[in-house]
Image 1 (cartoon, rainbow, N blue to C red):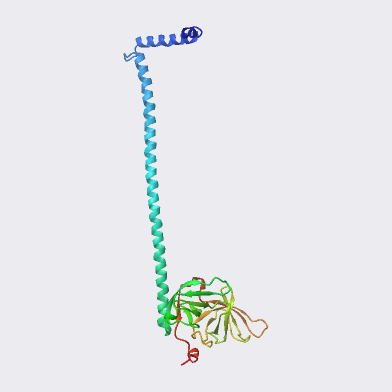
Image 2 (image 1 turned 135 degrees about the horizontal axis):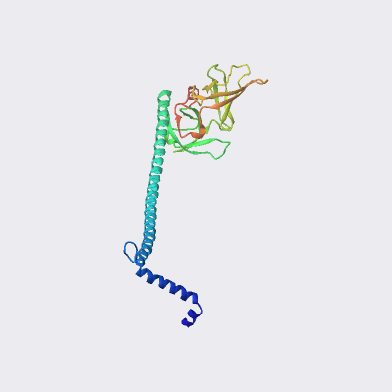
Length: 280
């Protein structure tokens, strides 16, 4: 069957005969250097094959080494990122400790400077209602705290205690809608009442329209309410609307940032007006 196929394909027979003839001639013909041409051609073809194989192997080896090196670099970068993240977390912890130490130092300075009997307390909770602004502190009646004691911070007046249990107390902030404090303009000694003005602002009411009040004036406690000690900072006059009424409409920016409170001082010593009312 194979011989029959070959007979029907004379081109294949002719091509094979030509190749065989060339190979025989090449085996007999020598090059200028005296070597058989067939040997030289065979060597050249084999050398090219070796070159191709060697190039392929070298390329694969180089590619593998590059992959291994990149994988090592990736692992090293991942390790460095983890170490950097750990250092950043540690830095935040150190900053927080430093901030807390600074806050406690300010409380201590206020305690020493004020000449009042106070106790430091930490805020452990806040009221959920946006209208009734209160916080919970970690000191209570077992620490000598009772209702209507003033609460202050290094920045200024915070509020007053409205409820006390054995180990905790609720503090009504000055920005609560039901809070109020007797106040005086420090520069001109004009008196009035400070109340919540909406959001985190305050207002000063019952200041006569003829009184000397200017934006930037410092507002401090007057002590006439019998709760808050005299002279503690409440805030700064921000707006003065003289209008045509009997009283000024005065906007006050609180000295205390109520959203950032963490530690406070509770004044255990009542002001003189309140002390005279205590039962003997």
